[in-house]
Length: 289
Image (tube, rainbow, N blue to C red; front, side, top):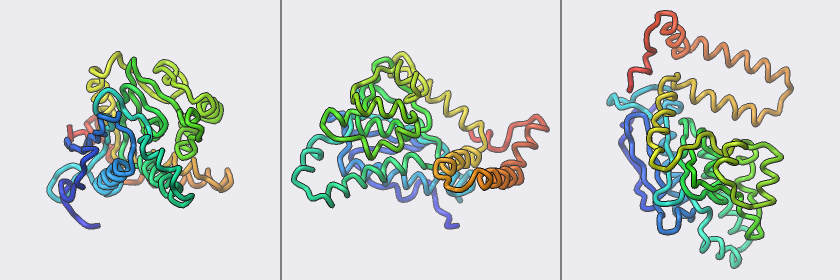
């Protein structure tokens, strides 16, 4: 596998930013003037940065550090600059769809799907800090994250119906997070739900009093992730993705899980984790803090 420095070849961006602190990447949407609405340009930049993080993740590289000793990535924290996380698709972009061909509109939808699928299946553990609104495509981002923190003013909506369209591209990801009944209800109503309801139905995982409390909440989740086997975190996501996509028989699935369990128990990380527990010492990956 090719060796390279974690800091090399960071894509140039103007609508979002990425900063690295050890094994943690902080990804921030920066279209504050339009509430971080998703434009084709922003979507492209986000995909580029997520791909860059994939290439430099522990899950992809199978190692804790690069050739210079810098840690590969284990966590991505996604935030939106300003008062709102993401107001959905840029209205100007949406209006332009009326003058486009069916092929052009499908290409636009494909851009969004690439973003959501890349985030949903990313080998890092992904955390979202969601302030203000997360509407339409913004709700899609929320649904794709592994752990979502909201605050008292957070409002989320599958708002496409208010515009006479459907949350089709974000639908599979919302469905996987919420299940059939809640996804159907929210898609039909297209109304904003408050943070307490979002927490109750599982659209978010944690609530803080205000966005000023995000940092402590994020740090608490990051600490938990960094105490867990790095490959185990990435492989756990792959495990669930496999369940989502399984088309074989129940017996074949059971046999597959036996093989996977055997593989992980016999892996270098699995042996280190078991040995550290028996010997009552920190596992090797816990020394990165």
